[in-house]
Image (cartoon, rainbow, N blue to C red; front, side, top):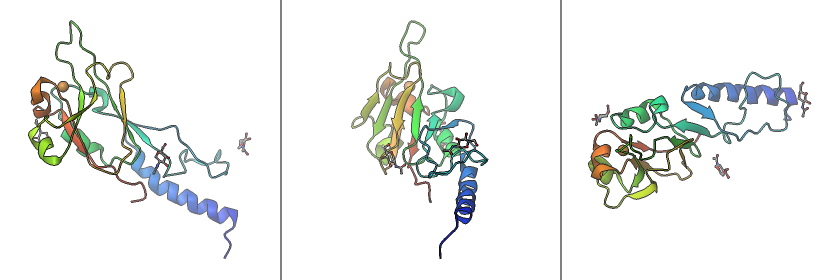
Length: 173
Ligand SMILES: *[C@@H]1O[C@H](CO)[C@@H](O)[C@H](O)[C@H]1NC(C)=O
Ligand SMILES: *[C@@H]1O[C@H](CO)[C@@H](O)[C@H](O)[C@H]1NC(C)=O
Ligand SMILES: *[C@@H]1O[C@H](CO)[C@@H](O)[C@H](O)[C@H]1NC(C)=O
Ligand SMILES: [Cu+2]
């Protein structure tokens, strides 16, 4: 039962249409990877026909960036799902005369330390200066839960809302 090229193209277009619905978040930009299966998609309305190789670039906090006084648990909930290979971008100002309470990024080892903002076994992934400019990029390239938190002020920033949890999912789910 050989499919003609037209039938195949129609099927791919339908799959792309279904998957395109999930990517309408304003904080999300499409990543650089882009396959086209060797077809010429110039006349197609869908610019990202391959659902598996498209990674998103998500600014953590959106226009609020990574800051004190913002609830990132709430943000992560409204911006879910996150996908395998998505890039999270953390933007925050480095320490300076006008910025005496800078931020950082830590990964907490488990749900228990996440809930308590217990930083004792946390691993620092970005220092107070690494969120400057274009921000610090973190790729969700493992299939595991990620517990992010700000590590400054001995857990006070974390307790005030600067923490969130992400479990990347696969696009075909
Ligand atoms: C795709 O189509 C565009 C415009 O119709 C054309 O300029 C381009 O050469 C085509 N690419 C391929 C690989 O056929
Ligand atoms: C994730 O990214 C890696 C490295 O760029 C790539 O080899 C892999 O195929 C990607 N996996 C998925 C599911 O997108
Ligand atoms: C952030 O929002 C979550 C979910 O709405 C809530 O459970 C939590 O208490 C909030 N955290 C802070 C520090 O306000
Ligand atoms: Cu902080």
